[in-house]
Image (tube, rainbow, N blue to C red; front, top):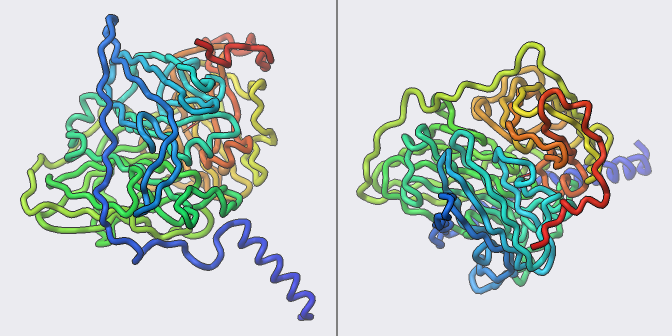
Length: 489
Ligand code: C2O
Ligand code: CU
């Protein structure tokens, strides 16, 4: 080969490697940690009870400083604190009411990821909260138990707001979930996993821009760098939440122990599944129950999964079991009585094409365009085809079951109720979607890639949930002067 050709080939290869952000070397923190810092457990937020019986919570978005790295102060954002937010925990049937206070110096929103609720309460890009203002959503919890979460959803700025620290866990209990370990902070532990890139002086860096946005080389769990956790019970339920911008994690333990998967994003499984790995892309959750013997130690680890967002090998959390452990009842048999989501034979089928240019069906997100109109409370089949890079797909106000991935059954760890699904490069994923019952012909809901840079770049569409039979009557454009998009109080 002529050296000129070789040069061109090299350039091409470098370009590909640079774009996919993979290179030939695995990003890793293995060997760098001492597991010195006790894992932060986000405070459980206590409600006050309103005169109408609603549980009232106040969430204040604010800026602050957090010491992640020893001796270095990092500028961060948080909710009721300097980084991340408290855990909200309620039960099915509860009425909830929030004061979401924006003490930042810029507009934001707060979205309830995984929640079934009226569209105006959703906290998506249209429910903007200006600096200094308070947004007051309220609804009744009307869905099976699940580990959901909240985070900003300001169009074009979600990645920045979440990366700086605005996110928290929102747990829904019901009779099924209470049979699992449920003593918060004792045998029921939230784990919010996020990769970060730090500058030399310890600030959060938004560099290392790949097509997926910033991919970090350090890990925070619940905002704790270099964490350990001492457990005092023989069975621990971990609620794993991938709260990262783009990175995917292949969760497991360094001693390769198995564990029981008991829930996917949108609820408890019918039966536990014994596994040793669970993969989560951004926005996805899983609940696992892990058994410990007195005095033993292990490390929650993310195993290298390949290129792009799956490239990386990380120690996440050292777990040390006390010399005496509280025994808990073993988990077996039926967990949930909620039937799996199925679509009827004549179900509506919708197609979504994801491209390398961060669009869906050839279109970028437009706040004033309605892309789909869906009858409320129905079940449909959505087919998502990926024509470039890794993506995932999240639908607001819905839960779904994966029917197949490239024509094959999904992995064991992703067969339950979900609201976010990984879509591999070149992949075709079909899901049976069950939409919420609330209808509103004026306020759209979102479906989008949860790789936050892609979402900000416009890889998002809007749908309306409407009264069945009224689909053809709703306008496909929203009025440009609609002041309903802002909240002035
Ligand atoms: Cu987690 Cu549309 O968001
Ligand atoms: Cu994407």
